[in-house]
Length: 267
Length: 289
Image (cartoon, rainbow over all chains, first blue to last red):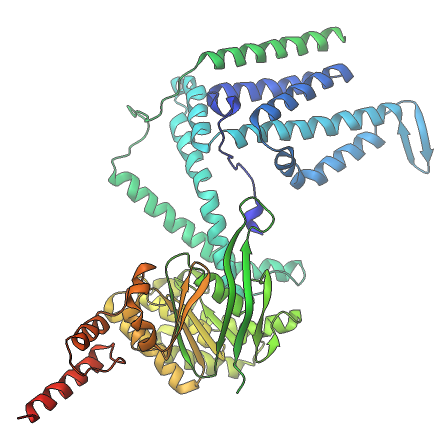
């Protein structure tokens, strides 16, 4: 059951979306998110949907897989939708008891849900098509100007890649410890909240201990290979911007400009 | 007598219904009698670990049944839970599951889950600790202050303390030094002699189990490839080698000697047996004119 977690899972592929430089993809995702928040009417939303759909189709990632990422946030999405539905002032078309539903409310609820779902889908598309290593490399490179302000960019990127690397390991470990404690009669599934929290101790304590042990071992392994931070460190795969990256960025800039114009002039 | 544990056409698929689906074990028909010591051997990925997790209901078969004393262990939730205590399973590297403040409390975790009384828990904890050679004074220490070998013993005691009818151990000696290995196997055999329970030992070292088990089951690619007394299984040394397993060296030596015409029995596969057989041959030869 724990294996179903897809957080940050990478699906290897060889499409143009996969091949884009991670810096390009990060920038484009940022542009996409900003554009999404600039969208205010039917036409601009339609444009965003077309853009997202095009990216998904080109990346050859199945829609079902991308929608899976939305599932854990379903409750948040529904609550947001309902709040917008009930608390938007305007012309009521339906009212009973204390509930009033307005045309504006429906419109805002739909837009809000659409915005959140598209936001999640867009960011998942990034993590599905970019390996964690490439992602952190890209982030490090994009943030490198901050080094001038003595911000530990390399360290941050290294911590991120280590964390991402160890997610599957820790999931596997959790599975193993859970089975072992179940074999001794531990019960993780029934009981009230207090009992369940207590039942987690036999799982969490060994998990923490093993995480610390792994961290310690990793630190020793890194030091014995003379790792001492990012100063003067070279990369086996250094990032290169290809013509396709510049074209993609140009298209992104075009989208952003278009959305700003539409937002300002309410076309 | 009916077998204490039995599987019928057991089959398990991993990641069922996804593109990553694959068969872990298929068509496993296995049975164990009360008091038997069975060795399960197989290459990494042969499905042996998946198989043993079915025996106490941790994994649910995709198809087929697991019977404990003739009853399907998935017939009801309460029975599945009960079987967890009757079929004790010690995982690989069990020392990583220790969590309590003291060794005593950790060993008592299983018996406590069985809802035994305080006295009963005390008896089973002390009994189990003695079987694995954990001294009385260690019981009040933190399990995290112990050495690797001692932790392993404590973890095994944690399962023994539930007094299971079937004790399954997955690679109980992995990563230990030779003397630690020997003493753990000795402890397990002593436990078997004292309680008469069924023991299932999973390993990929032939040498280790050759001298302790009554029966050997060989797993290969999710199927049972061979099932029989060690001497029968070791006959097929070529086949075993073709799937990446070895046979005890003594049995190879005995086989070669047999080919050279010496009267050495096929059941010889441990150093002790070989010594006896060779002395008998020499004694016989010396007696001849």
